[in-house]
Length: 308
Image (cartoon, rainbow, N blue to C red):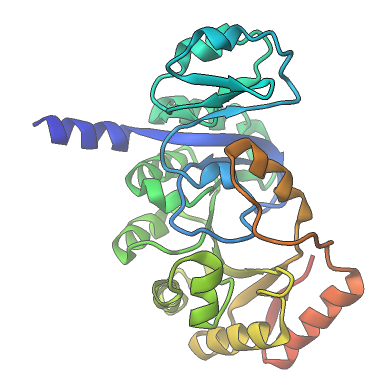
């Protein structure tokens, strides 16, 4: 009985680490993007490291800290060294956070009930009338799959356009439940080679490819855009793009495909969560370099190429 109660609580609440309003790169029109916490992948270049862990954690913003040392009184939770706090566990930091006058100590996410999240989304519904909507991202939204499906159903009932950004590393059962309530599905296929995918993301690509094959052969195929984030030395190679395109067009010759330019700004987030960024310092690809990647995809046979 207790276990059932805990499971129901998990379904009725979600951990969200960010809600970005007026987003323009996560689907058509002005969008509200909801970032769910938790991800099964560990990509070396992850853009949102604060979304990796499934549990709520406490984080420290050193640029906000006024070094008042108010947090030092919480000996069980705080180890104060080198003029900053270090956290000794991630259980209950409510009192620590309330005590910090500058907001330097915060939780990395908030719990949302269905009603609370729906109300937050509907704050922007005036903008959704002009081609916008809500996009669920992460992390990996399917990590909180049952809640995701419930909020998708609520959005459809309210006639709000829905999109998802997903690795598709999840069960086919959850995918089948979610698809009827999604208007747009962005799926990452990062690296085609199985060994390289495993080395760069810490998971196999087989499940992702199987799920992509299913959806590109389903009645929902026209809702799907496959994406490859272009990561220097990893996914941004002619061979990788060629292999991905050949795989996709063999399933569905009309598949929509997009390549995303490398974003070097994510590395600044890693200090917040005590993680080390997995790449050396690289810049975004130039227009000329992007054109080269487009040409590779076109030569491999892609028909519906989405360009930045």
